[in-house]
Length: 417
Image 1: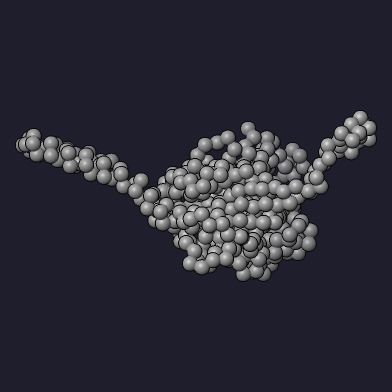
Image 2: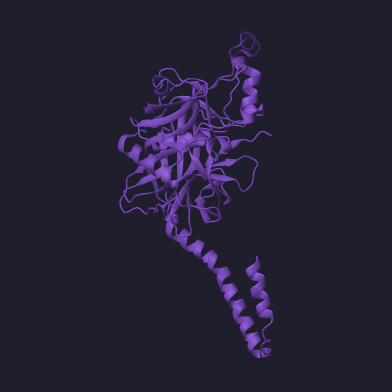
């Protein structure tokens, strides 16, 4: 079944990210990380003891009724507390959530049929005349992170935009300037001129657990300041799991409703802290929304604010988890017999990459990276992401049954490969 990931872009036709998972052999189903290329007994006894005790006298019916009424009132109070909690969070954070309108002028794509001589001869002067350029417009969300007007949003909301307008909840519309975008993580920073602007407090996404409360605020389908609630459904969803293999993000999954136009809006905890930035949905699914952890977004934003760009650590390998299915496919398609049962198989090494310069080869099996055993590509990617460009990263690999310890000098991911 083909799943499509649609970055919830709300009428946004500047950039569209709709990767699809492919129907394929076990070899293709294996997780491939191109991003690194681009990179009771006691209870029973206790119960019996209680049952052997003398039975207490029956309670007074009037006292029992009063107790029951009190319990019901406490239950009603606890149920009504949750909506009030959400309302308090929205009242505090809502003013910092903005609507972003972006526009981009692009060349008009004229169908080839319009240039066909027969077409021209048949229609003559009645042939439609299309303008050379057209303006594409889109809408997304964002949130202010500083009183001086710095805003976090998704890269696909503003990337390549000629003009950016930021609309605040109080009705003001401010001109925005794109400070920088990073398509690999889908994070962007926009700056507006202002002082003492309302801003959202950033929380800690590293300690999140499934089941915690989640509140989303944004502008889905052009409906400004929409609030939805739910829970954190899962953490650490790597990009390949959700069909967005071109991204370097371990996503947070939530069932708080996210729709086109929520892109770039905040996902909040019950204390009103931003824990993630909403970014993607699975088309046709319900209760499956994905957000970028605020720890990741903040780290990227700091680089964009400082230099306008982001340096991503890079090794230059294409790899796949070593599974029985992969081994069988390699034996069938390449006549390659692999005796190892665990590890990460290097499928390809990019020429003149850090991995190439360190002597890694196609067919090598990664067993450990930075001193930690590895058995899946996601652990390798996480280790690389935590490294700094220029670091010497120790690895252990097996080549034709022989263990080899090696060091790779981490490079910078090229703009183009």
